[in-house]
Length: 334
Image 1 (tube, one colour):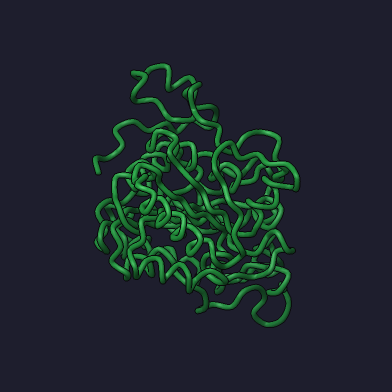
Image 2: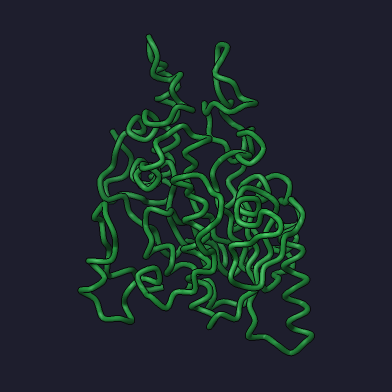
């Protein structure tokens, strides 16, 4: 995939910058012809990163497929806030699966389209980190192993937000949740647990794996479009901050997502058949404190006295990501 030659780093709207580009080079979201697949009127919280991620990703997929798209959606925040019975915000063929079988349901839809002689109809499965890394892990691995023609998108807000902010296997170390309280000698989520789903997807050797954040719209859209050029199993892992569960201001969702990348805590890359082919470099490397401090789920790290050793361990995770994925030209922080 060619690198993105146009990047916007202004903190406001993309609209002004897009006016300087040829129409075919503008983002999907700046185009009045976008599908609005996830339409207004849903009941997401203010600043919901998952609502943004789903809108960006599915609109990009709709454009890439000429609106020939079907979505299977796992139980979770995205399903609950977008389809309170008998209403829906989805302007496309959409089906609600169980919490753990979105990948299997999507596989069945893809098989049905193939049998009906409609190969132009593409299938997306989507779920949160709980329905992906935990409850749906077996069905997802089966989809990868069979190389089913489905794009699976995980919207990662790092906990079970819909049921009360409980820990998932995507919850980061030291984070406070309803089941990893900020008490005891080692408050928050323990170190050394969890799953690196993008790496696991790569280990299956599937055609395409990518990570993205809601802070880089053009990168996210390009990766969805690129994924639709492949046949077979594909996986995109999108970082979507949750103001309610993470305890940050609703206006800071994009800032928090950008800080996750700029500190090295969330590597942004692409891989084809298990080999990394592109990495989104860190523009200006920041210490992990810049990312941790605005979030109440990490407030216990900055008390009196601050938990310097714990913060240093989290910095070590970021430094390892920087070395592993080559996120900077200079390497790890000194």
